Length: 384
Image (cartoon, rainbow, N blue to C red; front, top):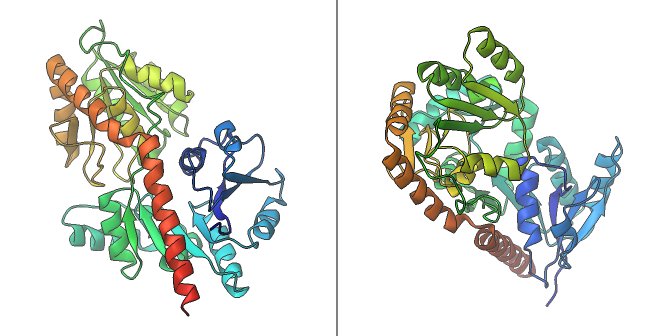
């Protein structure tokens, strides 16, 4: 029997490349629950795969200041559930409260993709969580109103989907009364794959790559120091950010010509760059599960990052290394630089692991969890 649609409270514009939008697009492109169609927003041209899916209905929002009002109004229709992938914490919470006040009901489903904390109490929260999980944890500082709104949405959720086992532990710690599930994000394996990669050790110059916003919290200065320590190796960081031009200028002034920050590139170009590289590394300490580590592994790169957020995309000693501090981090990079056979073995292991991250499989898990929650909440309402 058909039910009211499920609203994904986010946009699916083709040119919107933020992580949450990309995840929603990947799920909705494969949404085949015809008895519960999905609904989402778009401002400009929607993702073509989502738009072509007959099980998805799209609502166009004006690309001006009126978009919030129209989104709120459109969202006050009858839905069997609303998925909140954090379009805006405050807007999410306002919309949720309006639906509650009007008695519209439906399941509330939200996601957790990082370790949040009120920036006023960030250090205290980091210490508390570090003690609970048994190792140092770094939180993402959030402004007080946003954190309060985010926490209200999570606390009111009928299902909170965490994108890693570690984040599910965090969710159970912060919101112990909320039902949680651990479902990873997927990878576009048609784009990110190792089928035609350059064999490790065949490059004349070994290449170490990273990707992400070139901002302080990603610690690109650590990447800079790696380039200084290994002048025989080429280091490339893909992405835009406040520190990109500053670091590039600094590298030029110091004669550090093996460090290049080419800026942002599209997904196909990034995948091609990964297949031409030898090692992927991410020095940041505060992450959820950086999807770029999954994509790099899928392209056959060994991955080195910090262990503070327990990324499932890296199995220590299997497809890369997890470092407990900056000294170990530098040592792991050096180990891989010196050993082409190790790079090849770990890269192959990562590509094999990535088969389980295919969106074709992972999207089904998201759909099943969301659909089951909708049915559970509807059954509970009918028994009241």
